[in-house]
Image (cartoon, rainbow, N blue to C red; front, side):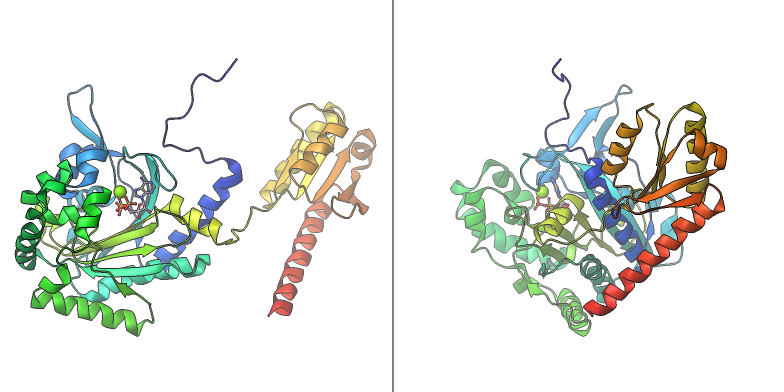
Length: 437
Ligand code: ATP
Ligand code: MG
């Protein structure tokens, strides 16, 4: 029978052959977060729709075109989160976390949902690693957040990502900029797409982020926001560059970056890759000083970044970054007959309690088939238990790579044997390291 029910377009299954890579980058992210003092926070997958229309902004592509919005059985207007910042902001206000010692620094690892056209690097369910930092208006905070991403990529072994920064000013300087933009786009109104026409009055800066090729072309010569910054925003941007220089973090100023979410002000940045095609932004972030207040909360500056895990893994793959594969099985215990299979169960349990990865047969297969399975899971050692082995409480342990074998007692000697082997392998790996250096 053909499989009737398949996964939804734009979603992906992460199979065991790939999941270790996800676990590795997620762990590395948490490790980096710990060094920078960001603690993990988890928020619900769905929220009230108005949380997103208010924070992400009702003239953005995300809100206008991409949200999975539905009415639940209680008539509530809900949306699957398209990004993480809105939910985290709601939660730090609702929980009172924002009233604790500042800065408040949190990290997240979430799935997001956007109804976009699926293509390379663009999915309908995707995953983000991100941080948010509340309470600091200083460019030092901007640099901490950028430096976090920079370190994370470096530890992972990803190279050559370009850090692009810009400042999109604050509500004060943006007024004048909006007027200039409006004037510019007004003159070419007839060529703009329908969505951008509606943006012209409400939020002309959004036109700069439109994906339509015609709008993109027109936007190329639009006035640049950097020419309109007020003194405060200018000083902030200079402060950011000075600190990036001090930390030797390379960057380029790209006056075209505005980011696709309305809540941003002052610093915006992206880490862009030349290795993964059109969907090249691996990580995006910036400041959103007015967001908490607009949600009815404290007037505290804030900032953050979000990084797409799918795109991150695409870059890692394209660059041949070696993500360590999980350790294979230490010992496979094959058995003949019920008594031996029970003894095998006891032994693997004991070994697992000692921290070893051990397996035995649960399929009732022939010894030949059991050994084939041991090969498939790349067991380092194997042994076969039968009547004799049980009677004498000893068995032959075989090195699956070299074929060498020796006799071993089925007691602590087995644990000691596996420990000794691990130490031997570690010593070898260390001396290989030395030779390479
Ligand atoms: P893009 O310009 O590619 O549409 P965006 O500006 O919409 O990205 P953000 O909202 O800033 O993206 O999200 C941060 C990161 O999340 C992106 O840099 C990207 O790595 C990832 N991301 C965003 N949308 C998707 C998607 N549909 N599929 C996979 N990853 C995504
Ligand atoms: Mg997008």
